[in-house]
Image (cartoon, rainbow, N blue to C red; front, side):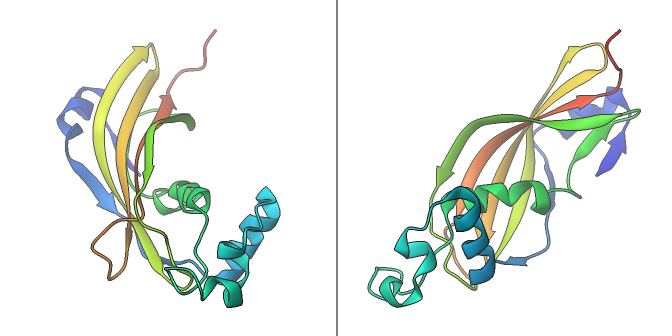
Length: 155
């Protein structure tokens, strides 16, 4: 993540901040997510039954793909000089556009949509994140995510 002077933050709005490396979504990851969320629907965990679906194989949970965003974007983005921490502030919009088939590789493309000073030492960053699937024209998802950068501890 790139550190920038506060007065330069507005110049990044509307610009692509970067693209992550590819990550393979394998059946072990899908199964672990199913165990963690108690969502064992056959389209995720039963390869034989999933062969009969339109996708012909198991697919990742949409929320699994969404949950990969922090990892995929960990090295992408900007933060103000003096940042003590950056915390997840939520999402404004998430759309699942294409299922991620087992064995697919995904990556994140990040655009800074907005940066708002929320008070002394606090910046709210809205990013447009597209999770792409290798060799697939349609992305897995698009999301507007919010991160709060804190440069001062409230007194």
